[in-house]
Figure 1 (cartoon, rainbow, N blue to C red):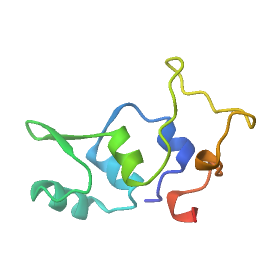
Figure 2 (tube, one colour):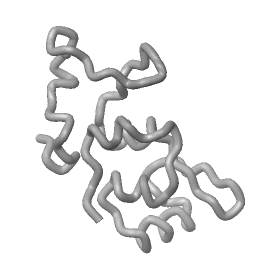
Figure 3 (cartoon, rainbow, N blue to C red):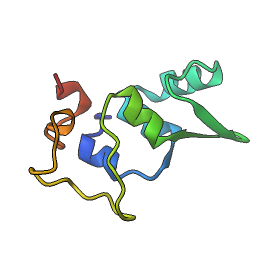
Length: 99
């Protein structure tokens, strides 16, 4: 399973299943469920019975990826004029590719 790109992360809903969170963190299924079971997953887990969910904002924070501002329901990519040093990165790179 390949890690998600930043563009793919931005396209995710506000809360994702544990396997999507694991993919974003480049983590395997067994490790993700073991960490979640032992309350050691690196992001806060929301449990609904046997279902696990992880907030996208927590994943972005953990990966040090800027949280996009939401001016509308859809996340718009900022223009070059609006970009700051903090978000001047290649959105199609994986988190591992970032400096």
